[in-house]
Image (tube, rainbow, N blue to C red):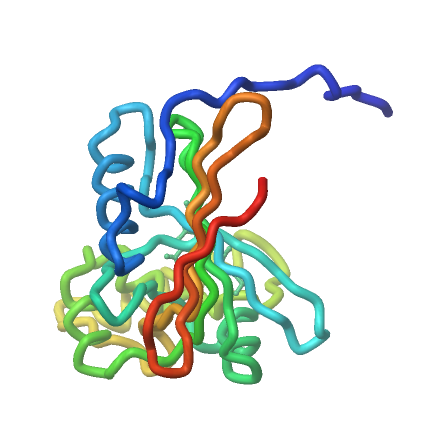
Length: 215
Ligand SMILES: Cc1cc2nc3c(=O)[nH]c(=O)nc-3n(C[C@H](O)[C@H](O)[C@H](O)COP(=O)(O)O)c2cc1C
């Protein structure tokens, strides 16, 4: 099998990222870019982001999750705390989040530390989910092996019966992570591969230091 992709090439020319036009706080820039992505009809699931962790096997692993909230503190997503990523974060909370919005020729890479969200906030979000998603959180031991699809469907059937006519509480093993950023890199594609890269890094006094990186 051989498929040559060496002629796949895009010219990036939709924007520029210049120092005279950026806020001091990277979360504000994130907000501007996110809102643009979210309002662009050609961007599907603007809140989908890759989360990379260092696993118990010391290998990095990246998977996509949905960003559910961002605040001045950081970025929140929800998952199963016993999943592969949950175990990885328990051992090493240093994670990397990345967004790629091809329609805007933009990428954002965030390094930070993940911490479990306060239980009442996870409860609040869980409560807002449709019943099907709530049951799914109970029915799946995320990242564990299972013999067959039928066995998985059976697990959903079992919990559906179990909670019939009752409120579905948040499982203790399911909740949010808040990722507090220590660096945020914004990438804007430019012609001739001379892309703009602006990196914000937190110093010891918690000031954001802005640098331009070569493409
Ligand atoms: C678009 C998209 C959104 C997803 N959102 C979530 C999410 O918010 N939370 C989650 O736990 N998994 C989500 N997943 C599934 C994860 O990619 C992954 O399969 C799962 O979390 C198990 O990962 P792990 O075994 O590495 O822990 C999403 C997948 C896709 C493609």
